[in-house]
Image: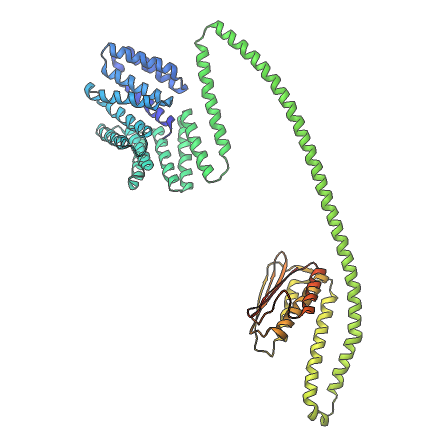
Length: 541
Protein backbone atom coordinates (compact mmCIF):
# COMPACT_ATOMS: atom_id res chain seq x y z
CA UNK A 1 0.00 0.00 0.00
CA UNK A 2 1.48 3.40 -0.95
CA UNK A 3 2.65 5.42 2.11
CA UNK A 4 1.23 8.67 0.70
CA UNK A 5 -2.23 7.16 0.39
CA UNK A 6 -2.23 6.11 4.04
CA UNK A 7 -0.98 9.55 5.08
CA UNK A 8 -3.73 11.30 3.16
CA UNK A 9 -6.45 8.96 4.42
CA UNK A 10 -5.29 9.24 8.02
CA UNK A 11 -4.95 13.01 7.55
CA UNK A 12 -8.58 13.22 6.50
CA UNK A 13 -9.53 11.12 9.53
CA UNK A 14 -7.63 13.37 11.95
CA UNK A 15 -9.11 16.48 10.38
CA UNK A 16 -12.61 15.08 10.79
CA UNK A 17 -11.80 14.11 14.39
CA UNK A 18 -10.71 17.69 15.05
CA UNK A 19 -13.88 19.15 13.57
CA UNK A 20 -16.07 16.88 15.70
CA UNK A 21 -14.76 18.50 18.92
CA UNK A 22 -14.46 22.09 17.73
CA UNK A 23 -17.28 23.13 20.12
CA UNK A 24 -14.93 22.66 23.09
CA UNK A 25 -12.86 25.62 21.84
CA UNK A 26 -9.72 24.26 23.56
CA UNK A 27 -6.10 24.73 22.54
CA UNK A 28 -5.74 21.13 21.31
CA UNK A 29 -8.09 21.95 18.40
CA UNK A 30 -5.89 24.90 17.47
CA UNK A 31 -2.66 22.89 17.55
CA UNK A 32 -4.18 20.00 15.60
CA UNK A 33 -5.58 22.40 13.00
CA UNK A 34 -2.18 24.05 12.56
CA UNK A 35 -0.51 20.67 12.18
CA UNK A 36 -3.09 19.52 9.64
CA UNK A 37 -2.57 22.69 7.55
CA UNK A 38 1.13 21.84 7.30
CA UNK A 39 0.43 18.31 6.04
CA UNK A 40 -0.05 19.62 2.48
CA UNK A 41 3.63 20.65 2.41
CA UNK A 42 4.96 17.56 4.21
CA UNK A 43 6.51 19.69 7.01
CA UNK A 44 6.73 16.87 9.54
CA UNK A 45 9.06 18.62 12.00
CA UNK A 46 6.63 21.50 12.58
CA UNK A 47 3.68 19.05 12.60
CA UNK A 48 5.39 17.00 15.34
CA UNK A 49 5.87 20.14 17.46
CA UNK A 50 2.18 21.03 17.22
CA UNK A 51 1.10 17.41 17.82
CA UNK A 52 3.07 17.18 21.08
CA UNK A 53 1.71 20.55 22.19
CA UNK A 54 -1.84 19.26 21.58
CA UNK A 55 -1.03 16.01 23.43
CA UNK A 56 0.46 17.86 26.40
CA UNK A 57 -2.49 20.28 26.64
CA UNK A 58 -5.01 17.41 26.41
CA UNK A 59 -3.25 15.41 29.13
CA UNK A 60 -3.05 18.42 31.46
CA UNK A 61 -6.74 19.20 30.98
CA UNK A 62 -7.78 15.52 31.03
CA UNK A 63 -9.27 15.71 27.55
CA UNK A 64 -9.32 12.01 26.68
CA UNK A 65 -10.54 12.45 23.09
CA UNK A 66 -7.92 15.14 22.56
CA UNK A 67 -5.24 12.66 23.63
CA UNK A 68 -6.56 10.13 21.12
CA UNK A 69 -6.57 12.70 18.31
CA UNK A 70 -3.02 13.78 19.17
CA UNK A 71 -1.74 10.19 19.26
CA UNK A 72 -3.43 9.53 15.90
CA UNK A 73 -1.71 12.60 14.44
CA UNK A 74 1.67 11.44 15.78
CA UNK A 75 1.03 8.02 14.21
CA UNK A 76 0.33 9.69 10.89
CA UNK A 77 3.51 11.78 11.12
CA UNK A 78 5.59 8.71 11.96
CA UNK A 79 4.10 6.86 9.01
CA UNK A 80 4.79 9.76 6.67
CA UNK A 81 8.43 9.77 7.81
CA UNK A 82 8.54 5.96 7.23
CA UNK A 83 8.85 5.29 10.99
CA UNK A 84 6.25 2.52 10.85
CA UNK A 85 7.26 1.20 14.27
CA UNK A 86 6.39 4.54 15.88
CA UNK A 87 3.16 4.72 13.86
CA UNK A 88 2.02 1.30 15.13
CA UNK A 89 2.93 2.27 18.71
CA UNK A 90 0.93 5.53 18.67
CA UNK A 91 -2.09 4.04 16.90
CA UNK A 92 -2.14 1.17 19.41
CA UNK A 93 -2.16 3.62 22.34
CA UNK A 94 -5.02 5.53 20.75
CA UNK A 95 -6.95 2.32 20.08
CA UNK A 96 -6.46 1.10 23.66
CA UNK A 97 -7.85 4.39 25.03
CA UNK A 98 -10.83 4.57 22.66
CA UNK A 99 -13.05 2.26 24.74
CA UNK A 100 -12.34 3.90 28.11
CA UNK A 101 -12.79 7.39 26.66
CA UNK A 102 -16.15 6.49 25.11
CA UNK A 103 -15.15 8.16 21.83
CA UNK A 104 -17.20 6.03 19.46
CA UNK A 105 -16.54 8.12 16.35
CA UNK A 106 -12.82 8.13 16.99
CA UNK A 107 -12.74 4.40 17.73
CA UNK A 108 -13.85 3.28 14.28
CA UNK A 109 -11.37 5.62 12.58
CA UNK A 110 -8.47 4.63 14.82
CA UNK A 111 -9.37 0.96 14.28
CA UNK A 112 -9.16 1.24 10.49
CA UNK A 113 -5.91 3.26 10.69
CA UNK A 114 -4.28 0.74 13.04
CA UNK A 115 -5.36 -2.19 10.85
CA UNK A 116 -3.95 -0.56 7.71
CA UNK A 117 -0.59 0.30 9.31
CA UNK A 118 -0.19 -3.10 11.03
CA UNK A 119 -0.85 -4.82 7.74
CA UNK A 120 2.05 -2.97 6.10
CA UNK A 121 4.37 -3.22 9.11
CA UNK A 122 4.34 -6.99 9.71
CA UNK A 123 5.51 -9.73 7.38
CA UNK A 124 2.81 -11.45 5.31
CA UNK A 125 3.32 -14.72 7.23
CA UNK A 126 3.15 -13.05 10.64
CA UNK A 127 0.13 -13.86 12.86
CA UNK A 128 -0.22 -10.09 13.31
CA UNK A 129 -1.57 -9.98 9.76
CA UNK A 130 -4.66 -11.81 10.96
CA UNK A 131 -4.98 -9.18 13.71
CA UNK A 132 -4.78 -6.45 11.07
CA UNK A 133 -7.53 -8.11 9.04
CA UNK A 134 -9.75 -8.46 12.12
CA UNK A 135 -9.21 -4.78 12.96
CA UNK A 136 -10.34 -3.76 9.49
CA UNK A 137 -13.38 -6.04 9.76
CA UNK A 138 -14.21 -4.48 13.15
CA UNK A 139 -13.85 -1.02 11.64
CA UNK A 140 -16.18 -2.04 8.82
CA UNK A 141 -18.81 -3.25 11.32
CA UNK A 142 -18.62 -0.05 13.40
CA UNK A 143 -18.78 2.13 10.31
CA UNK A 144 -21.77 0.24 8.90
CA UNK A 145 -23.56 0.93 12.19
CA UNK A 146 -22.69 4.62 11.94
CA UNK A 147 -23.65 4.71 8.23
CA UNK A 148 -20.75 6.98 7.24
CA UNK A 149 -20.47 6.41 3.49
CA UNK A 150 -16.99 7.84 2.84
CA UNK A 151 -15.49 5.84 5.71
CA UNK A 152 -17.21 2.70 4.42
CA UNK A 153 -15.66 3.33 1.02
CA UNK A 154 -12.17 3.64 2.52
CA UNK A 155 -12.44 0.45 4.60
CA UNK A 156 -13.80 -1.60 1.69
CA UNK A 157 -10.84 -0.44 -0.42
CA UNK A 158 -8.38 -1.35 2.34
CA UNK A 159 -9.87 -4.81 2.77
CA UNK A 160 -9.70 -5.39 -0.99
CA UNK A 161 -5.99 -4.58 -1.04
CA UNK A 162 -5.31 -6.70 2.06
CA UNK A 163 -6.96 -9.72 0.45
CA UNK A 164 -5.06 -9.14 -2.80
CA UNK A 165 -1.70 -9.05 -1.02
CA UNK A 166 -2.50 -12.07 1.16
CA UNK A 167 -4.07 -13.87 -1.80
CA UNK A 168 -7.24 -14.61 0.16
CA UNK A 169 -10.95 -14.46 -0.63
CA UNK A 170 -10.43 -13.81 -4.32
CA UNK A 171 -14.16 -13.80 -4.96
CA UNK A 172 -14.71 -11.08 -2.33
CA UNK A 173 -12.04 -8.69 -3.60
CA UNK A 174 -14.07 -7.36 -6.51
CA UNK A 175 -17.16 -7.03 -4.30
CA UNK A 176 -15.23 -4.90 -1.80
CA UNK A 177 -13.93 -2.62 -4.55
CA UNK A 178 -17.36 -2.21 -6.12
CA UNK A 179 -18.82 -1.42 -2.68
CA UNK A 180 -16.07 1.16 -2.12
CA UNK A 181 -16.91 2.90 -5.41
CA UNK A 182 -20.64 2.76 -4.68
CA UNK A 183 -20.40 4.38 -1.23
CA UNK A 184 -17.96 7.05 -2.39
CA UNK A 185 -20.20 7.98 -5.33
CA UNK A 186 -23.22 8.19 -3.00
CA UNK A 187 -21.59 11.12 -1.17
CA UNK A 188 -19.73 12.46 -4.24
CA UNK A 189 -16.38 11.88 -2.55
CA UNK A 190 -14.02 12.07 -5.54
CA UNK A 191 -10.94 11.23 -3.49
CA UNK A 192 -12.33 7.93 -2.22
CA UNK A 193 -13.66 7.01 -5.67
CA UNK A 194 -10.12 7.47 -6.96
CA UNK A 195 -8.77 5.42 -4.04
CA UNK A 196 -11.09 2.54 -4.99
CA UNK A 197 -10.21 2.87 -8.69
CA UNK A 198 -6.55 2.34 -7.76
CA UNK A 199 -7.45 -0.91 -6.00
CA UNK A 200 -9.40 -2.01 -9.07
CA UNK A 201 -6.38 -1.25 -11.23
CA UNK A 202 -4.15 -3.35 -8.96
CA UNK A 203 -6.72 -6.16 -9.06
CA UNK A 204 -6.58 -6.35 -12.86
CA UNK A 205 -2.82 -5.90 -12.85
CA UNK A 206 -2.45 -8.99 -10.63
CA UNK A 207 -4.61 -10.85 -13.18
CA UNK A 208 -2.26 -9.55 -15.93
CA UNK A 209 -5.21 -7.84 -17.61
CA UNK A 210 -3.08 -4.79 -18.28
CA UNK A 211 -5.52 -2.92 -20.52
CA UNK A 212 -8.20 -2.99 -17.80
CA UNK A 213 -5.63 -2.05 -15.16
CA UNK A 214 -4.46 0.92 -17.22
CA UNK A 215 -8.08 2.06 -17.70
CA UNK A 216 -8.73 2.22 -13.94
CA UNK A 217 -5.35 3.75 -13.07
CA UNK A 218 -6.03 6.49 -15.61
CA UNK A 219 -9.51 6.99 -14.14
CA UNK A 220 -7.95 7.42 -10.69
CA UNK A 221 -5.48 9.96 -12.09
CA UNK A 222 -8.33 11.91 -13.69
CA UNK A 223 -10.24 12.00 -10.40
CA UNK A 224 -7.16 13.02 -8.42
CA UNK A 225 -6.59 15.87 -10.84
CA UNK A 226 -10.11 17.03 -10.02
CA UNK A 227 -9.28 17.04 -6.29
CA UNK A 228 -6.12 19.09 -7.06
CA UNK A 229 -4.24 17.18 -4.37
CA UNK A 230 -0.58 17.11 -5.49
CA UNK A 231 0.37 14.06 -3.42
CA UNK A 232 -2.52 12.01 -4.82
CA UNK A 233 -1.79 13.13 -8.38
CA UNK A 234 1.87 12.18 -7.99
CA UNK A 235 0.90 8.74 -6.66
CA UNK A 236 -1.53 8.13 -9.56
CA UNK A 237 1.12 9.20 -12.07
CA UNK A 238 3.40 6.48 -10.69
CA UNK A 239 0.64 3.84 -11.06
CA UNK A 240 -0.07 4.77 -14.69
CA UNK A 241 3.64 4.88 -15.51
CA UNK A 242 4.12 1.44 -13.91
CA UNK A 243 1.34 -0.21 -15.95
CA UNK A 244 2.58 1.42 -19.16
CA UNK A 245 6.06 0.08 -18.41
CA UNK A 246 4.63 -3.43 -17.86
CA UNK A 247 3.04 -3.23 -21.33
CA UNK A 248 6.19 -1.77 -22.95
CA UNK A 249 4.16 1.28 -23.96
CA UNK A 250 5.38 4.81 -24.44
CA UNK A 251 4.63 7.73 -22.11
CA UNK A 252 6.43 6.52 -18.98
CA UNK A 253 9.03 9.28 -19.10
CA UNK A 254 6.43 12.05 -19.52
CA UNK A 255 4.39 10.80 -16.54
CA UNK A 256 7.43 10.48 -14.27
CA UNK A 257 8.60 13.93 -15.35
CA UNK A 258 5.21 15.40 -14.42
CA UNK A 259 5.47 13.66 -11.04
CA UNK A 260 8.92 15.19 -10.43
CA UNK A 261 7.53 18.64 -11.33
CA UNK A 262 4.72 18.18 -8.77
CA UNK A 263 7.24 17.10 -6.11
CA UNK A 264 9.41 20.11 -6.91
CA UNK A 265 6.34 22.34 -6.71
CA UNK A 266 5.47 21.02 -3.26
CA UNK A 267 9.01 21.62 -2.13
CA UNK A 268 9.00 25.19 -3.41
CA UNK A 269 5.74 25.96 -1.62
CA UNK A 270 7.27 24.62 1.59
CA UNK A 271 10.36 26.79 1.16
CA UNK A 272 8.25 29.89 0.56
CA UNK A 273 6.21 29.14 3.68
CA UNK A 274 9.36 28.94 5.79
CA UNK A 275 10.85 32.12 4.37
CA UNK A 276 7.65 34.04 5.23
CA UNK A 277 8.19 33.27 8.96
CA UNK A 278 11.80 34.48 9.10
CA UNK A 279 13.12 37.91 10.02
CA UNK A 280 13.90 40.66 7.51
CA UNK A 281 17.63 40.22 8.09
CA UNK A 282 17.45 36.53 7.29
CA UNK A 283 15.51 37.30 4.12
CA UNK A 284 18.19 39.74 2.96
CA UNK A 285 20.96 37.24 3.67
CA UNK A 286 19.01 34.51 1.92
CA UNK A 287 18.45 36.67 -1.17
CA UNK A 288 22.12 37.63 -1.29
CA UNK A 289 23.18 34.00 -1.10
CA UNK A 290 20.64 33.09 -3.77
CA UNK A 291 21.98 35.89 -5.99
CA UNK A 292 25.55 34.66 -5.66
CA UNK A 293 24.49 31.06 -6.26
CA UNK A 294 22.40 32.05 -9.27
CA UNK A 295 25.34 34.03 -10.67
CA UNK A 296 27.65 31.05 -10.25
CA UNK A 297 25.10 28.67 -11.72
CA UNK A 298 24.66 31.05 -14.64
CA UNK A 299 28.38 30.96 -15.34
CA UNK A 300 28.40 27.17 -15.07
CA UNK A 301 25.34 26.89 -17.31
CA UNK A 302 26.90 29.18 -19.92
CA UNK A 303 30.10 27.15 -19.94
CA UNK A 304 28.10 23.94 -20.12
CA UNK A 305 26.10 25.34 -23.05
CA UNK A 306 29.28 26.21 -24.90
CA UNK A 307 30.68 22.76 -24.23
CA UNK A 308 27.45 21.12 -25.42
CA UNK A 309 27.48 23.26 -28.55
CA UNK A 310 31.02 22.20 -29.38
CA UNK A 311 30.16 18.56 -28.71
CA UNK A 312 27.06 18.71 -30.90
CA UNK A 313 28.99 20.40 -33.71
CA UNK A 314 31.66 17.69 -33.55
CA UNK A 315 29.03 14.95 -33.57
CA UNK A 316 27.25 16.51 -36.56
CA UNK A 317 30.53 16.83 -38.46
CA UNK A 318 31.39 13.21 -37.69
CA UNK A 319 27.92 12.06 -38.72
CA UNK A 320 28.12 13.98 -42.01
CA UNK A 321 31.56 12.51 -42.73
CA UNK A 322 30.37 8.97 -41.99
CA UNK A 323 27.29 9.55 -44.16
CA UNK A 324 29.41 10.80 -47.06
CA UNK A 325 31.72 7.79 -46.77
CA UNK A 326 28.77 5.38 -46.68
CA UNK A 327 27.15 7.00 -49.73
CA UNK A 328 30.46 6.95 -51.59
CA UNK A 329 30.98 3.30 -50.74
CA UNK A 330 27.46 2.35 -51.82
CA UNK A 331 27.83 4.23 -55.10
CA UNK A 332 31.19 2.59 -55.77
CA UNK A 333 29.71 -0.86 -55.12
CA UNK A 334 26.72 -0.10 -57.38
CA UNK A 335 28.98 1.11 -60.18
CA UNK A 336 31.16 -1.98 -59.88
CA UNK A 337 28.11 -4.25 -59.85
CA UNK A 338 26.69 -2.58 -62.94
CA UNK A 339 30.05 -2.91 -64.71
CA UNK A 340 30.16 -6.62 -63.91
CA UNK A 341 26.58 -7.06 -65.10
CA UNK A 342 27.36 -5.25 -68.34
CA UNK A 343 30.44 -7.40 -68.92
CA UNK A 344 28.49 -10.57 -68.21
CA UNK A 345 25.68 -9.53 -70.53
CA UNK A 346 28.13 -8.71 -73.31
CA UNK A 347 29.90 -12.05 -72.93
CA UNK A 348 26.62 -13.91 -72.65
CA UNK A 349 25.14 -12.27 -75.72
CA UNK A 350 28.16 -13.12 -77.83
CA UNK A 351 28.16 -16.69 -76.57
CA UNK A 352 24.41 -17.03 -77.10
CA UNK A 353 24.66 -15.80 -80.66
CA UNK A 354 27.46 -18.22 -81.44
CA UNK A 355 25.77 -21.24 -79.84
CA UNK A 356 22.38 -20.44 -81.34
CA UNK A 357 23.91 -20.01 -84.80
CA UNK A 358 25.82 -23.29 -84.54
CA UNK A 359 22.86 -25.21 -83.20
CA UNK A 360 20.48 -23.87 -85.80
CA UNK A 361 22.75 -24.15 -88.81
CA UNK A 362 24.42 -27.47 -87.98
CA UNK A 363 22.57 -29.66 -85.49
CA UNK A 364 19.13 -28.32 -86.32
CA UNK A 365 19.61 -28.71 -90.05
CA UNK A 366 21.00 -32.21 -89.77
CA UNK A 367 18.27 -33.45 -87.46
CA UNK A 368 15.54 -31.96 -89.63
CA UNK A 369 17.02 -33.68 -92.67
CA UNK A 370 17.03 -37.04 -90.90
CA UNK A 371 13.43 -36.54 -89.79
CA UNK A 372 12.21 -35.66 -93.27
CA UNK A 373 14.14 -38.58 -94.81
CA UNK A 374 12.56 -41.05 -92.40
CA UNK A 375 9.08 -39.72 -93.10
CA UNK A 376 9.55 -40.32 -96.91
CA UNK A 377 9.93 -44.12 -96.67
CA UNK A 378 7.75 -45.88 -99.24
CA UNK A 379 4.78 -47.99 -98.21
CA UNK A 380 6.63 -51.19 -99.14
CA UNK A 381 9.53 -50.26 -96.93
CA UNK A 382 7.32 -49.06 -94.08
CA UNK A 383 6.12 -52.53 -93.14
CA UNK A 384 9.57 -53.94 -92.50
CA UNK A 385 11.18 -50.79 -91.13
CA UNK A 386 8.32 -49.49 -89.12
CA UNK A 387 9.84 -50.26 -85.71
CA UNK A 388 13.16 -48.64 -86.62
CA UNK A 389 11.50 -45.58 -88.07
CA UNK A 390 9.29 -45.10 -85.05
CA UNK A 391 12.21 -45.29 -82.63
CA UNK A 392 14.36 -42.92 -84.64
CA UNK A 393 11.41 -40.61 -85.12
CA UNK A 394 10.81 -40.29 -81.39
CA UNK A 395 14.52 -39.79 -80.66
CA UNK A 396 14.88 -37.08 -83.30
CA UNK A 397 11.78 -35.26 -82.10
CA UNK A 398 13.19 -35.34 -78.59
CA UNK A 399 16.46 -33.83 -79.80
CA UNK A 400 14.59 -31.09 -81.65
CA UNK A 401 12.56 -30.36 -78.51
CA UNK A 402 15.74 -30.04 -76.48
CA UNK A 403 17.17 -27.80 -79.18
CA UNK A 404 14.15 -25.53 -79.00
CA UNK A 405 14.46 -25.31 -75.23
CA UNK A 406 18.09 -24.33 -75.55
CA UNK A 407 17.32 -21.60 -78.07
CA UNK A 408 14.44 -20.36 -75.84
CA UNK A 409 16.75 -20.09 -72.85
CA UNK A 410 19.35 -18.15 -74.84
CA UNK A 411 17.22 -15.83 -76.96
CA UNK A 412 15.91 -13.64 -74.09
CA UNK A 413 17.98 -11.20 -72.03
CA UNK A 414 15.76 -11.99 -69.08
CA UNK A 415 13.18 -14.61 -68.18
CA UNK A 416 10.31 -14.61 -65.67
CA UNK A 417 10.31 -17.11 -62.83
CA UNK A 418 6.85 -18.26 -63.91
CA UNK A 419 8.12 -18.97 -67.49
CA UNK A 420 11.07 -20.86 -66.04
CA UNK A 421 8.72 -22.95 -63.88
CA UNK A 422 6.39 -23.73 -66.81
CA UNK A 423 9.27 -24.89 -69.02
CA UNK A 424 10.78 -27.03 -66.28
CA UNK A 425 7.43 -28.68 -65.50
CA UNK A 426 6.86 -29.43 -69.21
CA UNK A 427 10.36 -30.88 -69.52
CA UNK A 428 9.82 -33.10 -66.46
CA UNK A 429 6.40 -34.33 -67.60
CA UNK A 430 7.76 -35.29 -71.04
CA UNK A 431 10.77 -37.04 -69.50
CA UNK A 432 8.63 -39.27 -67.23
CA UNK A 433 5.60 -39.51 -69.53
CA UNK A 434 5.96 -43.24 -70.26
CA UNK A 435 7.20 -44.28 -66.79
CA UNK A 436 5.41 -45.31 -63.60
CA UNK A 437 7.20 -42.66 -61.56
CA UNK A 438 4.76 -40.38 -59.66
CA UNK A 439 5.74 -36.78 -60.44
CA UNK A 440 4.40 -33.90 -58.32
CA UNK A 441 4.93 -30.14 -58.40
CA UNK A 442 4.61 -27.45 -55.73
CA UNK A 443 4.86 -23.92 -57.07
CA UNK A 444 4.77 -20.72 -54.94
CA UNK A 445 5.15 -17.47 -56.89
CA UNK A 446 5.14 -14.65 -54.31
CA UNK A 447 7.08 -12.27 -56.56
CA UNK A 448 7.36 -13.09 -60.27
CA UNK A 449 10.91 -11.77 -60.52
CA UNK A 450 13.04 -11.76 -63.66
CA UNK A 451 16.21 -13.81 -63.93
CA UNK A 452 19.34 -12.68 -65.71
CA UNK A 453 19.80 -14.76 -68.88
CA UNK A 454 23.13 -16.17 -67.69
CA UNK A 455 21.68 -17.08 -64.31
CA UNK A 456 18.50 -18.52 -65.80
CA UNK A 457 20.31 -20.63 -68.44
CA UNK A 458 22.73 -22.16 -65.95
CA UNK A 459 20.00 -22.74 -63.40
CA UNK A 460 17.84 -24.46 -66.04
CA UNK A 461 20.74 -26.71 -67.13
CA UNK A 462 21.45 -27.69 -63.49
CA UNK A 463 17.78 -28.65 -63.05
CA UNK A 464 17.82 -30.63 -66.33
CA UNK A 465 20.90 -32.52 -65.18
CA UNK A 466 19.27 -33.34 -61.83
CA UNK A 467 16.07 -34.56 -63.54
CA UNK A 468 18.04 -36.62 -66.08
CA UNK A 469 20.04 -38.25 -63.29
CA UNK A 470 16.80 -39.13 -61.46
CA UNK A 471 15.43 -40.62 -64.70
CA UNK A 472 18.54 -42.63 -65.58
CA UNK A 473 20.03 -43.71 -62.26
CA UNK A 474 17.73 -43.14 -59.28
CA UNK A 475 15.23 -46.02 -59.79
CA UNK A 476 12.74 -43.87 -57.89
CA UNK A 477 8.98 -44.25 -57.62
CA UNK A 478 8.37 -40.61 -56.70
CA UNK A 479 9.83 -37.33 -57.92
CA UNK A 480 8.89 -33.92 -56.45
CA UNK A 481 9.71 -30.43 -57.71
CA UNK A 482 9.31 -27.52 -55.28
CA UNK A 483 9.64 -24.06 -56.86
CA UNK A 484 9.40 -20.84 -54.85
CA UNK A 485 9.79 -17.26 -56.09
CA UNK A 486 10.20 -14.85 -53.18
CA UNK A 487 13.11 -12.53 -52.69
CA UNK A 488 15.13 -15.24 -54.48
CA UNK A 489 14.26 -18.03 -56.96
CA UNK A 490 14.58 -21.48 -55.41
CA UNK A 491 14.13 -24.90 -57.04
CA UNK A 492 14.36 -28.14 -55.05
CA UNK A 493 14.24 -31.56 -56.78
CA UNK A 494 13.83 -34.64 -54.57
CA UNK A 495 13.36 -38.35 -55.27
CA UNK A 496 13.02 -41.49 -53.17
CA UNK A 497 15.45 -43.52 -55.26
CA UNK A 498 18.50 -45.53 -54.40
CA UNK A 499 20.65 -42.44 -53.70
CA UNK A 500 24.44 -42.26 -53.77
CA UNK A 501 27.43 -41.12 -51.78
CA UNK A 502 27.33 -37.33 -52.18
CA UNK A 503 31.07 -37.09 -51.54
CA UNK A 504 31.93 -39.29 -54.57
CA UNK A 505 28.86 -38.91 -56.76
CA UNK A 506 27.26 -41.45 -59.08
CA UNK A 507 28.39 -39.44 -62.13
CA UNK A 508 31.40 -37.30 -61.39
CA UNK A 509 31.24 -35.46 -64.69
CA UNK A 510 27.58 -34.57 -64.30
CA UNK A 511 28.00 -33.38 -60.72
CA UNK A 512 31.11 -31.37 -61.53
CA UNK A 513 29.31 -29.80 -64.46
CA UNK A 514 26.44 -28.75 -62.16
CA UNK A 515 28.88 -27.29 -59.61
CA UNK A 516 30.79 -25.45 -62.34
CA UNK A 517 27.62 -23.88 -63.71
CA UNK A 518 26.54 -22.85 -60.20
CA UNK A 519 29.90 -21.22 -59.53
CA UNK A 520 29.93 -19.32 -62.84
CA UNK A 521 26.42 -17.95 -62.32
CA UNK A 522 26.92 -17.28 -58.55
CA UNK A 523 24.18 -19.76 -57.62
CA UNK A 524 23.83 -21.64 -54.35
CA UNK A 525 23.85 -25.39 -55.01
CA UNK A 526 23.15 -28.01 -52.34
CA UNK A 527 23.38 -31.77 -53.02
CA UNK A 528 22.07 -34.04 -50.30
CA UNK A 529 21.94 -37.80 -50.97
CA UNK A 530 22.06 -40.99 -48.92
CA UNK A 531 22.32 -44.53 -50.21
CA UNK A 532 18.95 -46.27 -50.03
CA UNK A 533 17.06 -43.08 -49.03
CA UNK A 534 17.07 -40.77 -52.04
CA UNK A 535 18.49 -37.52 -53.35
CA UNK A 536 17.62 -33.82 -52.86
CA UNK A 537 19.20 -31.14 -55.05
CA UNK A 538 18.51 -27.48 -54.29
CA UNK A 539 19.58 -24.55 -56.44
CA UNK A 540 18.96 -20.93 -55.40
CA UNK A 541 19.45 -17.93 -57.66
